[in-house]
Length: 273
Ligand SMILES: C[S@@+](CC[C@H](N)C(=O)[O-])C[C@H]1O[C@@H](n2cnc3c(N)ncnc32)[C@H](O)[C@@H]1O
Image (cartoon, rainbow, N blue to C red; front, top):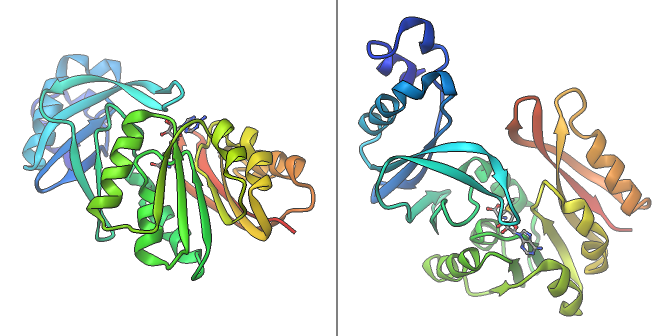
C-alpha cells in the first residue's frame, strides 16, 4: 500500500493498482537489496518505482526486478537491474545473520517463520541432515534455537556452499558441517543415520524422498517441501509422500507461504515407522 501511495502522483491513476503492494528486502542497516515484481504495463515507470522503494528504505543500495520465475538447478531468478549497487548483503532474522548475494544463490526472507517452526521441533541431541541447504539458513536457525548433536548440510551451488561456510562462522555455529556436492551422490555416501532430514526443494524434493528415508532413523522425521494448488494445498504432497513411504505417518502439515498465483509452498512432516 505504501508503495502505491508514494508513486500515485507519478504514475497515471488507472495504473496505480498494478503497482506491487509489497517487495522483498534482503539485508539490513549496513546495506540491503530490494527485489520487486513490476508488470509489463508499468515498464515506463519502473525507475520511478525503484526510486520510491529507495526513498522508503534508506539502507537499500540496489533494486532488482524479477524477470520470470525461478529456474535452473540453483533455483535463481533472472533480474533486471533497476538501481545498480552491491548485491552481497548481510540479512538479519530472529537474531542471527545470513550473508548472501541473491543474484548468485537462492535465499528467501519469506521462509523465516518456517525456519523458526522447524528449529523449535528439534530435540536436544538430534542428528540433523539438511539437504538442498543454499546458504544454510535452516541450519543456523536450528543451531540457534535448539541443541542438535550435529547438522550436515549439503548444497550443490558453489556460491551457496561458500556463503554457508561463512555463515556458520559468522554465527559461531560449531556443530554444523557444510558439504559441497550433489545430494544424489552425497546422501548415499554419508553411511549414517539421522533423526531429522530437511528436504528443502519444493520443486522436485519428492524424487529424493527414498534417499532421505534411507538416511533416516526409525521414528525420525522428514520435513518434506512441495507445491500445492490453492483448492487443496496438501493433496499432491500427501500423494507423492504416501507413494514413497506408505507406512509413514504425517505428523504436521503447514502452508509455508504463497509461491505463485494460486500455488502454495507446503511442508509435510513425515515420521518413519
Ligand atoms: C529451494 S533452494 C533452498 C535453499 C535453502 N534451503 C534455503 O531455504 O534458503 C534449493 C537449493 O538446492 C540446491 N540444489 C539443487 N539441486 C541440488 C542437488 N542435486 N544437490 C544439492 N543441492 C541442490 C540449489 O542450488 C538451491 O540452493
